[in-house]
Every structure is written in C-alpha cells, then in structure tokens.
Length: 217
Ligand code: FPP
Image (cartoon, rainbow, N blue to C red; front, side, top):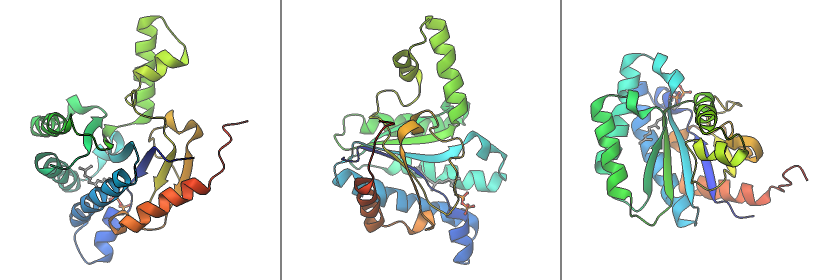
C-alpha cells in the first residue's frame, strides 16, 4: 500500500544540540532544517500530507527561553517559506501571540494554491482537547455518527493517517493525533530529529511498504 499521510513526532532537538556542545535552542534551528528536508522529500515521493508535532499544549510548561527558541523558528519558517508545500496549522492558534498568529495567516495564505503535499503543523495542540472539542461540536449538531465527529476534528479534510514516526528513541504518542492513530502504523527511530535526512525519509516510506495492514480483518 502507498503511504499518503505520515506524521512525525520530531523528538530529540534539545539532546542533539547538547550532544553538539550547543545551547538547546540551537537544536530547533537544525530541527527546522530537518523538517524542510524531510517534508520536501515526502512531497517529491508523492505523499499527500505530512503532519508534524511542533508544540504541544503541555510544552507551555517549558522554560520561557526554550519556548521562545521554538516560536522563533516557527515565525522564521512562516515568513520565509516560498516552496511548493501547502502549509496549514492545527491546534489552539488563537491563544498564541499576535505576531505568531499573523505569521501563520501569512504562510497559509501564501501557500494556499500550491499543488505540493500538505504540511500540517500541530502547534499548541493536544489530541485529547481536539477530541473533546469535536465531541462538543457533534453534540451541538445533535449528530453522533463517526462521519460528523471526524469532520469536527482538526484533521478533517486530510487523507487518513497511515503512519506515525517518532524520532529520539522514546516509545509513546504524547497526546498526538490519538483519534487518527487508530489504525496508523507506528515507527520509532533512535535517531535525533535534526539528524533526519532524505534517505531517512525514504527509509520511512520503505518501512511502511513492508508493513502488512489488516485493519482488524
Ligand atoms: C521535541 O524535541 C520537539 C519540540 C518540542 C519542537 C520541535 C520544533 C521544531 C523542530 C521547530 C519546527 C518548526 C516549524 C516551522 C514546525 P525536544 O527538544 O523536546 O527534544 P529532547 O527530547 O532532546 O529534549
């Protein structure tokens, strides 16, 4: 089966920086470069969507300087990305600073008509909150079938999630795309996110193609 939609938990940026004798903040700069490398390769290989976990609602508890470093990269990307991916964001965006929101609107508008893969960036996102939010919308509609519910999730309109890849060696989903993960393949890599190359992106595709998917049948 062909991989259409892959999601990445981009873990290991801080550890990568420490291992290279740099402050943790530098890890996110290199993490952004890895993201662009991997997403571009996925697009070139014909995928329709790449979702990435850039900042969870729980990450709000991190030290201010580290949060600043992450948002600095996000704003930089939003202001300077002129490639062919169609960039969209999911998560509680309204709660973020004005300049972040402006930069998001900017990149979403600028890339809206692109014909490349969708790059879906989860920011200030938590899957449980997204599920509760969708349940509220379904309740308001008085309709509880799966189609209505799925329409109300942040991922509505994207192809079904095929695979979640987590780098950095940890073996958990950390509140990322929990509803969508139902039948997704899981892949865990020891590699730290900033070390991800085009060849690693190819290896992810190859691994997916090796998996036998039965969907419970
Ligand atoms: C986890 O690594 C990763 C994050 C909290 C954020 C990742 C964000 C980026 C790579 C910037 C992406 C930019 C855009 C535009 C989406 P960690 O630092 O917690 O790693 P550690 O386990 O080594 O501490």
